[in-house]
Image 1 (cartoon, rainbow, N blue to C red):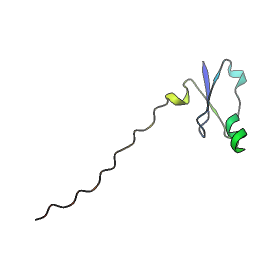
Image 2: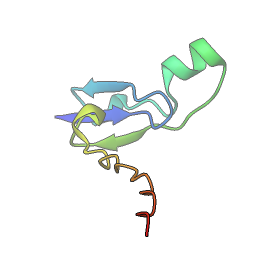
Image 3: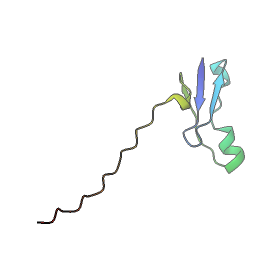
Length: 65
């Protein structure tokens, strides 16, 4: 099973046959008038791992001497 993923809006379309692969994202074209190239993948975009957000450490005040 193949998937077509859009990097702009994260739309994922499951394909039964690779011959039917669209070149541009239909959602981006319809909603925003933008031609965003899609890419073929064996995994849907929602299952790609995202980088974990790093906790921002606040500087600690200096101890009084």
